[in-house]
Length: 292
Ligand SMILES: [Zn+2]
Image 1 (cartoon, protein in one colour):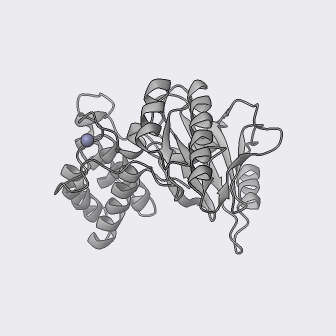
Image 2 (tube, helix red, strand yellow):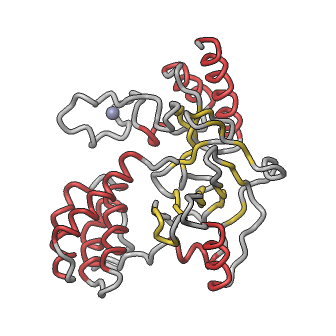
Image 3 (cartoon, protein in one colour):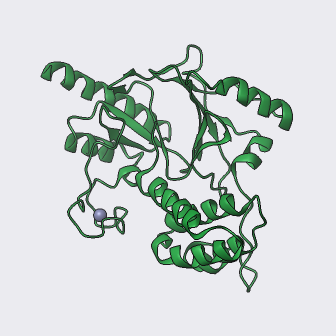
């Protein structure tokens, strides 16, 4: 058992190093598909504030790196890792994962075909990873400066999107359910650019510029994000709130902006409980990443 585990760990490292060499930032994963290294702040009263600034590993997807020496160090610190995760939304590829689930009651492949027909795009030839449960991950690349949020079944039932702050289980990973592999004939491909029409479905509109006319960004974005939510019409309130909350948490101002975002959402007509729940899921997604 120990020997098999050691071999899985060596294989996982080899695959991870190869991905890193191709510009894909990686982290070690355990058999459960979760980041293998536990947070160094797990006993702290408020563990969510650090994203690796402390210099220690164990910050989930924030640990992801393409530097081979750091990849080796991460795996050395987690000898129980049997797989690796690839961080989405990071330069140079700005990877977007289209995760097609195969539950008995959803045909996500047909749903994607339907979306493509309706919005006039074709899915390009690209890397496809087969999951042990029969699902498929399509790898696409996004343009810099467009943050695609993680989502689950927002596009269509059974279609999950791994974007900024999320990660994909890399091919060659061994998990409790089996091995992830590239689909025959796609392993040698480079991930293809996401079609524009699909990207527009994935990336909500940019928030309104702030009063000085600068696009909202980083710490300056709090006001812009709140305004963006406040100006939402019925039918876009929850999507806008979720998007704004994701951006806020990505920029480290999520907790401090949560009340203002809730007030804005309530002003736009969303029940407070729903608003709080939406912000909480944005917090979970951005802090844990969202591997599958
Ligand atoms: Zn830390």
